[in-house]
Image (cartoon, rainbow, N blue to C red; front, top):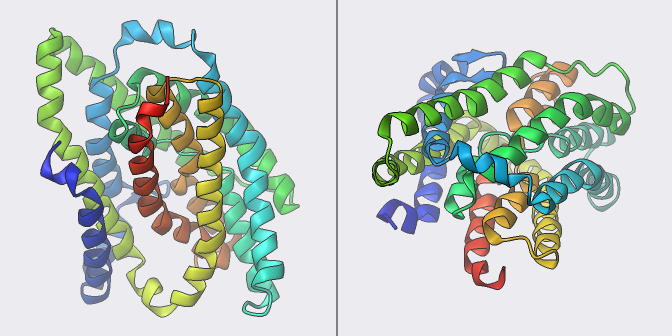
Length: 335
């Protein structure tokens, strides 16, 4: 394990602080990064995510894709948790905290906005970053690809109806360009690049050597992404720390609760750890590009709903790193 991986939590914490500092002291630089967008997908972040996803895609063996369907339990858990549980528990937690627990701390109109943002997060399972978490837990690359691909297909049909039902509106304008572009950028193209690389390298030994060589770039990409995300929201964090802390509470409970449910189900069903860990992490992580884009489209850039989706982005990396560490520590308990 490299020094970057061994002290990853420390580097991420430093990246958070550096991002906030840059966002406050060099706002013009952050504004330039924020402006590099196509269909609400930030191109700078896209490049960094590519650096994270590509090393894992090199490990996808097309011959093994035929065998993943012989292990349906992991996929079934992922689909059940992501689409039958997660959106509804997120909505319930939002209502519980912002209409009951925090009712005296937040204006009712703001509370409804925050609930809406949480619903958008809960209905959008992760597409790109899960490849990073899978790699950090030594997950099965081919099976992770299958899980993400199936979730993307379901998301095309299920996201809008679920969000419409939970928000109580019927005119949800799904930014299809964001959804399609994200899937192409973060799944399809890295996969094609990985398969091309495997074909060029040829032997298993050369593939393993190449992956070891490019793996540090994935960790560096994660650290740089964290710095940029916190830089983009640095002023918001400093201006509204109490509101951000309140929004983070239901997100934290949801994240750890969903992971416990999926990971526990995988353990009970004797799913191998290389499948169980990514299976649980997909539901815990969120497709924040889509959630933020829809929040801005429906409620506006400066809305409470948009702020709630952004808080989801800020909370996600520390939470996911803690769950990756837990998954790695409990590896020996699985089949």
